[in-house]
Length: 322
Image 1 (cartoon, rainbow, N blue to C red):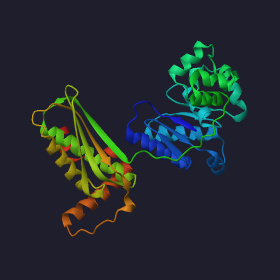
Image 2 (tube, helix red, strand yellow):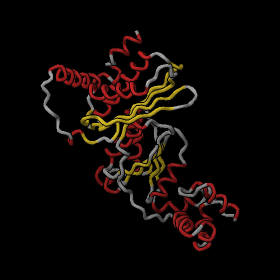
Image 3 (cartoon, rainbow, N blue to C red):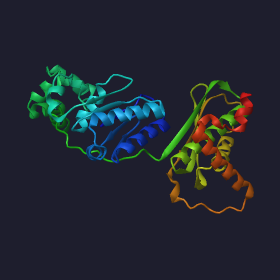
Image 4 (cartoon, one colour):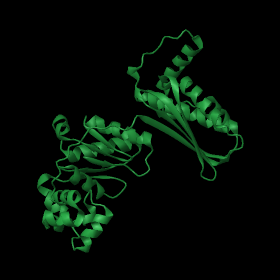
């Protein structure tokens, strides 16, 4: 299964799509920024349905849970599945190609539609009269190699015939997560900037806790009027996903920026070097204030899980809105 998400999908939503894929099959290969591969052999036996049905289940889940539609191609090889997903018009759909349909389905497609054929390669083939995949499959492999080069030509000839032995290789995204805020107009207001940063801190912390992860560092990126940017990364004393810990470091980062009269247009906070929360030993704290905040944080997470992410907002943000 080859899955294409909408262009410019936020990284945090893309990660959630990958999580939906992992519920269908344990073998998922992320293809950032917006695509993924899924091995279905074991999943088909486990779920007792065909590939098309799994693709439809995935679409229903991503639309209902994430508000994101996807294009799902299914086939006997990576090339066929990826070519199929590329033939689906947006916003989404499912196209499944059975092994005995591959040659007839690929044949009429324009040569540039074959996954792995770039624009320059397609133009070279068209210059020699090879304008569809069926013709490419009929050309002797040695001739294709002379046109496109040794390795590229051999791969193109094989894939036009539906030959692609590559396996799906499990691969997760790099261990990071980011949240962003764009200001509707240039802002110099220090309180507004800090309120936006606090909102990002809470959003990132909730996201990490929901995924059972903690961050070892934070990166703060600021965008200014005129297109200039500023970015700085610092490590946390201990890996954490708690609001207090992330907020303390985020405030240090923005203080280091020395904004003064800088006109901000956007701000991004990224959790770096993420690891599973169960890999970090939680130290017992004798700070009663901190312990009380951690209890409140746990309660807040349950409220958000029940009533939605907007059920609780940082106090400073609420004050600014009111």
